[in-house]
Image (cartoon, rainbow, N blue to C red; front, side):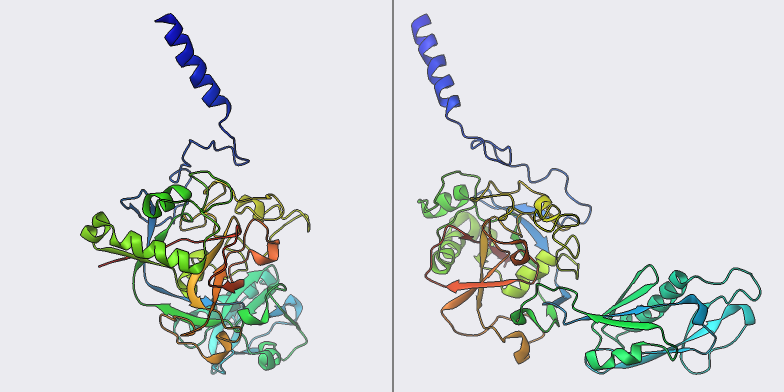
Length: 405
């Protein structure tokens, strides 16, 4: 008995010795914790019959693609006066006018939406440029919320930043003094195929994988594993667009999924960007820059993604922070197949504003999010990759959309 017991323990220790530890700290036999440190806005989840966790996403509207430019107005507090007019056009030509009204003198607005400020005549505390900028932003946002403009306005110190302004309207954003107007591209890495930014409405609720499809989930459905490095908690890779479609079809046909009324498909490009952005309009869903301190290391992006700066192979899913809706690895790890055929000028050809499906035909398909071999600039919310639908690459995987019948 003791010999058998000793042999049993020895065998267990030998097995433990070959367990590989991934760079994320998760061992091969240890599932990642998808519920730890979720943000307050994380979407409700469901789990299907193969152990796949899906976030439930409500229908909604968002701005898809990269903006062409930002108009920035630098405000100088010594030049404000009652009656000063701000005229703002959006990119489509809709216009609104605002005028400054000095609350100290009890002045009344003449014609346009009032923007209150204090000259200090009565209070000896004149409004600072920052305060006036905030008041102007509030007034413009009120017009935007009412549907009169589609302009994003934010305040950065004494600067007003406008997104969605027509380039040739930049002069009209200025006042009739010599406050400074700057036109700049908000995302210097955006490619032409990411523009113009345009409004998209998704009219139907759906669920989407909290992580990329893992090797364990693939094996449960397909009874095979094409991945270049085997680990049940790593994303499946070396799968083509057609392979990903086949997985969705087989998963949809499982008796448990049919009984639950769930069917599966790849996300449309619009759905993918909608969940990646999670309500944001910046280049990354955590901010404008991939790196706040070192242009080479990408230290901010490293908190959310496995990419060229911190990985040389695919990693266990959910090893980085989730986005605001609780989804992992939208940037990096493996690039994700979308349903749409790729067309470089699709955004400029007036795609439908509701539930866009992409071009109707084409062998080149969209890949989103970048991979572990991508530069930071290829791991942005609007970046559009592409490949032939038959290509199998260690850099490519996918996540699925679930539709409840």
